[in-house]
Amino acid sequence: MFNKVTSNEQKLTLLLAVPFVSKNIQTAAQTIISNNKHLDFQKVYQFAINHEIAGFVYRNSKSVDLFPIELRERLKGFYRKTAMLNMVGIKETLVILKVLYENGISVIPLKGTFASDCLFNDLGVYPSGDIDVLVSPEDLSKTKDILSSKGGYSLVDTISESDLLKNHYHLILLKQMTLEIHWNLVKRYFKVPAAFWWETARPMEWNGIKAMDLSVENNILYNVFRLFDHCFYPLRFFVLLSAIIEKNKNCIDWNLLLHTAESHRMKKLLVFTLIATQDLMGTDIPASISKNRSKKYGLFKYIVFSGIFSGIKRKHLRMMVYTLLLINPVIWSKVFLGRIFPSTGELRLRYNLPPESRKVYLYYLLNPILLLFKSRKK
Figure 1 (cartoon, rainbow, N blue to C red):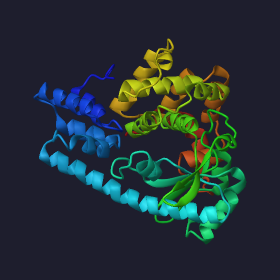
Figure 2: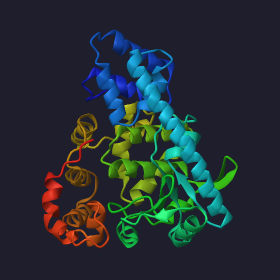
Figure 3: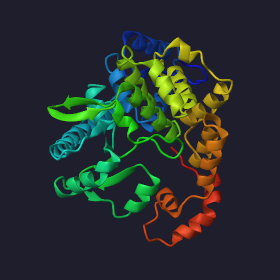
């Protein structure tokens, strides 16, 4: 679990970030503390905050009082704040699902507050700043109109809807919380038909409201892509993927998952991410997958882990490297050219430019330089 993790503070944080704590984990955490009298708990705390896993660290440590009182109270504050925000998010998500269901729209709630309630059964551990749902492309316009007229939502006026439709995979609506309406769950690097996510979706009922749910295999695939698309940062995304696997490990069809990933040219990404999740979180995956490490695994793992433990800088440059290592050269060349010479809509989204801004042409000229030198610190 701790291969390439050099600091005892990092080891302790990873132990306490697991989605489902056990006595063995708590004992291991206590051992690290007892064997390292000069452990810097402030570093552990800051690492947890940076990676948005403070709720997990608090929950998994509170029964054994691992932290000094002051830091424990700070972690408790994050836990309580997360719980309150998730309560608001769940209430609003259920309103959205009910309104859409009553108007004949099939909808799949995603991650966030839905995961906090249904996966972790604890509203204080997994933070979420917005609400995410998936609808079919055919229902997108109707969904937007229904939520605008009956749900009190409005489109973000600083972002062009046409830019989002052409270059992204979700619309952004605002109310009490931000709502992202997805019509697909992957973009740019892979081509997966929007209908694919619905082929194995299953009916469910959440707090008395009817909706649809992704199959566990497709949920894993979606969260693997999400990790990749976010530069494998923060650790919160690894914790979510680990939880999905651990909670469903007896019903995951691994052969189907691998076959599906291969059919969409995502197998290399899937295998790497599953092994990395095992190395980071101790997640239980089949031996046939964990032994299937490519020759480049060590290099790629070093690059990814350096971002996790040191912070993400020059995100676009990192994504080019990740893409080169995980995607075949033909696709990589198309992605690379798209990064260097994007559409004006993509530039507006990338640099947060207003819909009618003439600065987009300046950014078109500066884009290659910004990709190389613009930092994004986490």
